[in-house]
Length: 365
Image (cartoon, rainbow, N blue to C red):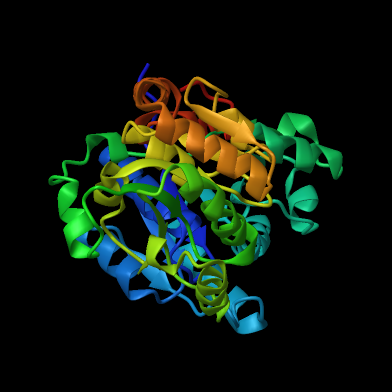
């Protein structure tokens, strides 16, 4: 029996250009492609509104800074009542508060994806009746359970990537674009330039790498938060490695940049999932990552990359190993791409989320 199509309202509350927002756009497009009727409530972010409009998905722009007030709640109620939705799917805490109130008053079940580690009490309140939580990793599942959320109300659905399907140009063009000698191996760190992502660990590891592998270039890809990138530039100058560090800023051609890299690193303090990890693996590149949070669920040590302590010494050693052993590096990259095809595609993510939706109604997918 073919499952019935659903009327779904996706709600996301962050105004950043990061994982949850892109996740919502991709998910909404795929759900519409599968025959569901989808609408989206989101902040007035031009790129997001344009992307959804191009796919023919109705949107409701809402200022999320005031959305928690009576005006925002009233607006949300009007959207839910008019849309006669079967289900609300919320992403991030503020969206979950909005969805929970509107869903409760309109008797519409709510699914909330927990993208990050959080102490917000809304998730414990939400996990009753037909409502469900989606954890993006087993790590987040454990965090929620440890904070009193009913385990049988939580489903784990890994994020997916379509990066394996993207066609790109020759990777040497990236060296030329950023005026980097073509002889240099690019070691990328993809993600917003912020202290918790561990850029300072990468910088401190670099002199240890350059001692043995002088043709190495750190390649920082992502938007900058505050003045942290200036602190990093000062640190690179103090260490005498400024000529071996490149900041690209925010980019919309990340698959192309991954293809130019020998491998990527993620020396994060903590990761609830690690989208940049699976995106890199999808391009056939291994990853050196901190052994924290959900990263051990994504990187198989010595098979698809290396899991190490979050120290300059550990990252320096791991980076040198991959630079000095190209055959091992390339084999890990091939393994990584296979793992993505097995577990982390967008199609698999959407299929598993649909199964969660139908579970809400006691139906099989």
